[in-house]
Length: 145
Image 1 (cartoon, rainbow, N blue to C red):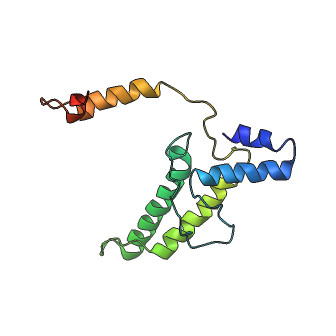
Image 2: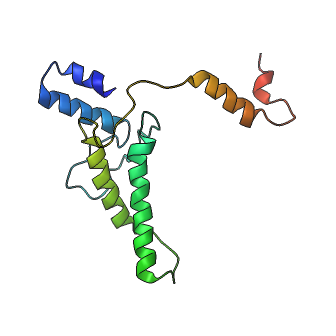
């Protein structure tokens, strides 16, 4: 998707970079994050997609924010209290990693898949068979003609 975005710029580097940032933002944060933002924008996760390397890249970074905050808080309190996330610290961390991820123009820090891998149709059929139709009873969808 990013290679196609770059082609649309016809060699204009500024426009190409802008298209890549827009593409990365539209599939994750929806609104391109600002480098100085700490609060999350109102449409956070509006465009949540779990494809093309975003789970292992973008969403993994967000999970790391949560895990690091939990570790820091537990270490500071020596485990005496239940962990309650500090939303301000969490959103600040998420805003920073969102900016870093969406502005990785060349995809060197956070690469994404350029081509699909595997057969989505056969995988979907296997998952449906395994989880949806695994009971002894016939599923209601199979009764539709």
